[in-house]
Amino acid sequence: MITGIELGGTKTVVAIGTEDGSIIDECRFPTTLPDETLGFVIDWLGGRGHPTHVGIAAFGPIGIVPGREGYGKMLATPKPGWAGFSLTDKIAAAFPNARIALDTDVNAAALAESKIGAAAGMDDVAYITIGTGIGGGILSGGLLVHGALHPEFGHLKVPRMPGDDYRGICPFHRDCLEGLASGPAIKARWKKAAHELPANHPAWDMQAWYLAHGILSLLAIVSPSRVIVGGGVSQVDGLHARINARLEEIAGGYFPAAMEPGYVVAPALGQEAGIRGAFLLTSL
Ligand code: ADP
Ligand code: ZN
Image 1 (cartoon, rainbow, N blue to C red):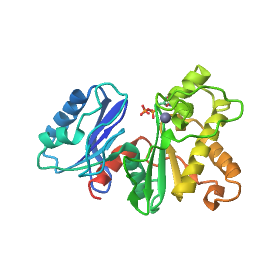
Image 2: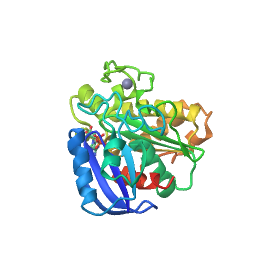
Image 3: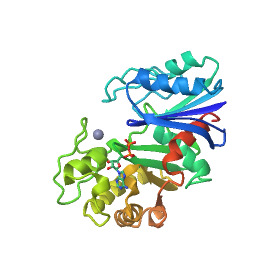
Image 4: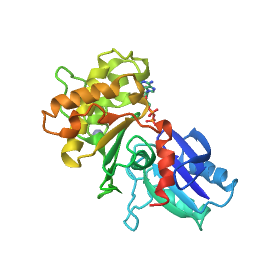
């Protein structure tokens, strides 16, 4: 019984699926306190059988390298009640015979899009989400990048768009990419939520500026063959085309990939990339 959990800052998905990433049955509910949220997950799965594999795709920061101190634990998250909570201990206590695979939500989404989505067949892929926060998962040479912690694409420093004097909303760095271009940053700067801004509002050229600069850094460091941009804020019409255009301009003719109009694309798996990636994590 292959199962998956996608733990997000605002919502959690628990599901039963297949090793090739299809969903058989799923349930979505709000993320509350850790014991309550995981308690619900465990009851839902336990009521449907005996999981043999549990793939977990979680928001971070979280320890994802097996054997290293902090593995399975939520680290310095500002989300109340979650810092120090061990996801893997909780799941292992409920399902002692299950094999657990854990990665970040964005790494899981990168994996899913590279296997069965918008970058199918590619070994070098980045998946970026723009929602309540900004995150990025990276598949490099066919392997998910972990490193000392895991990539934190949203906390890159990016050059200011000329004329933008908004101070930034990141509690750690103020005007990092997440501080300038996440959903809450858009709301604080324009006094309207992202989904209330029309597609021709100047906010979207600014979003494209900041994301294109973040993606240029990715190109320079890990050289993805394709970049997938998802998350709630990415749903506005035309954002991917705007990012491609700005990226081509700032790449200065240097990066061949950045000149292709289809370099930055929307996820093919939509809202399901994370949970389908959780299933795929179980067979890595
Ligand atoms: P989370 O990051 O909490 O998982 P989402 O990825 O759904 O949540 O992102 C929520 C953000 O997406 C909010 O800032 C909201 O304003 C924005 N959003 C939702 N729908 C749209 C839309 N169609 N166009 C632009 N922004 C949107
Ligand atoms: Zn930051």
